[in-house]
Amino acid sequence: MLNRLSRKIPFMMLAAPLFALAACGGNPEDYKLPEDSVIKGVGYIGATVSDIDKTTGLYQSAFDLKQANDQAIADNAVFDKVAGRQGVKADTRMLRSVNGQVRFMSFANPSDEAKNTGQMAVHGPGIMHVCYQVNQTTEAYQKFLAGGGQFMGDKEMQQLNPKNPVLYAYARDPDGLIAEIEHVDVTKLDLPAPPKNKYRIRHVALATPDIDRAVDFYSVLLGQPSPRRFGQWFFMRMEGEKIDKVSGLPNSVGEAAWFQIRNMELEIFQFHSHPTKDRQKPRPIDANGYNMIVLDVADMNKARALFVRAGGTIVTEPGPMDGGQIMFGRDPDGNLIGLQTAPFTSFVSSRNFKNDGME
Image (cartoon, rainbow, N blue to C red):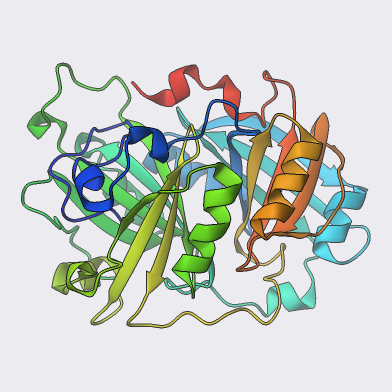
């Protein structure tokens, strides 16, 4: 969910809202990956669904995602280790926007634990939602509902700040995955020319029980010691009737932080009104819902060392996958993070998006 106080939003761009520099200190260089960072971008967001074909139809219709690759994962020691059992098999499909992508996975014979795992609550804990930012003329929200999505708060989209020409809504797809949808009236933006792209993935969001702990981890991992933050002071917290109508949580109060990971943002959100509990054990990878964030890295050994130094826990050592190497770890909240090396031209690489989709 974006900050209500930003004066204008550069549509289809991942720049910080104008208020951020004055409110949080620092300079624009603090809000993006350092040039020498071993982390090069977000390769993809993983999500488990019950029917890939139905999911494809919904997300193509609503958000214009393009089918980039179909790949079965089987007999893979790294994937088995993450799942905690042998012989895991999944059909996967990568759907791509102009700047990022989501990899939908459908598992053969999901575990009993996965079958008994409920939907992720809006306040987590875990990977809370993916945000799609679109030109309002696309009617993406209406198409998402028509395709089987279910609004979570008020059915009507909400304009959180009258000075921002943006309407917001949270909605679940038939498998319970939450999409934040932002409709932007581009005719009211102060831009020299209309954006070329009508659709993009703006961010992936984590719901955390301890935003300071999460920020400390990602500050080290991403080399961004002063991320954008809003709401850490009591009198500036995110709250109000319109916020409730988006989230579906009554009397919700929260704070957030944002990291720029080159082609996509990472949002971290803590609901103070609806405390998020620490997980006792990881969410099963084969349970319906978002299951991983895979980062594109330049050097596996350096990335592994950095992940550990930041405070992450290693789950697997590197192994082959998708024509490259991948390893998995968990952040302090238990979210599954992949570190992957792959050729620039690979379908999993974050570096094959033209200008990071910022047009």
